[in-house]
Length: 432
Ligand code: UDX
Image 1: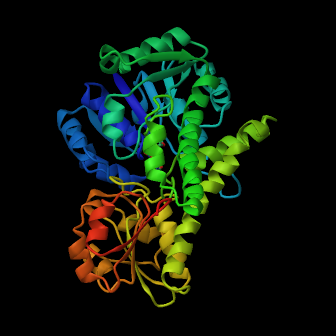
Image 2: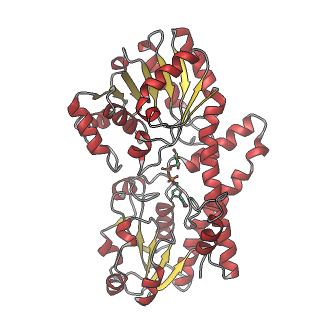
Image 3: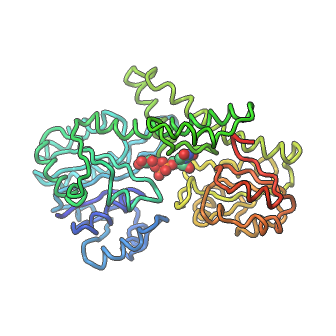
């Protein structure tokens, strides 16, 4: 099939490459000419394991091209909208300008019978409005949310755990086109749920709200553990053994960040308020607050461990990405904590295997270095992103570099007994 993918960021670039890898003929379109040039040369504009190989192979096969010209979308049977929906500058709601401008630019090239497929995360009600613009062209809209996790985006796109099709006018045509697009996943028995637009839009935001709630729940337990002497990691292990609860997404630490969870729960609150049901998701305000308090906790604990004043003390920050295997620093707890400590006068040196470039663009005044440069003569070490490069550090080697062997494990990810045996003063979050 011929497909177009509008928006070549974390979502669209992976979707375009993955669909080309299963034999579709795909054009990826983006307004950013530098990004398109990079993608056309087979290089990913961001770090995502497996993506460069997929891009290179798909481009070499002739199945994948990238363009800045929307006219190249003409002739595709399905057009995927995969642009960003960031938080508005002046409030909690999602900024939909990129979705609307993508549809504006695409519409002249949409032919009768084509299916426009929304993948971006949008406030409930958006698809209905878009359909009213697309249907007069004789084309149909489907809403097909994407659940990929950064760091596993290729795998999640090629082997999703479910497919959701939100359909309206032209439902039969939309379903048959999407079935043809996803034939590999469907042949592998991937479950498929067909719903209306509102349900499919809500599936995505409610899934992210649930995940955020799970993380903040365990972080709230970490706060309780901190004043009672309990151990939140053992608590998570024990409650997680109940199959109804499950252990995944119960890792207490500095909390969630990234381009999805924080802005999605805020946009959900804003949309619910508009709909007159703000009370239904008011708890998300607390979920957000618990999450942000974990960052305060690390700043406060660092200050306490440095005898109440961080001025001129060297703080090694290990990790900048919002999670490992990503270079994404959007709403990253690590970048926030590092900048706040630097603003308090600490001599912060931050390091990350992939995210220094993005972090520097966001926080040009922060000091960045290698792992060794960060550790050398540090008064305290903060592990804020659980990259394997950091969780596998030899604690004796690290102790030989620092001034004082004190570590805050902001992800409860280190083998703490090894660190304690190597004479480190070890502080997990929510555990003794
Ligand atoms: C999320 C959803 O998981 C995905 O389905 C959706 O499509 C996009 O949003 P992503 O933002 O890539 O994906 O990251 P995710 O793996 O969900 O992690 C989000 C944040 O939560 C990270 O900062 C991570 O460090 C944190 N986290 C995750 C925890 O603090 N504890 C956990 O137990 C799990």
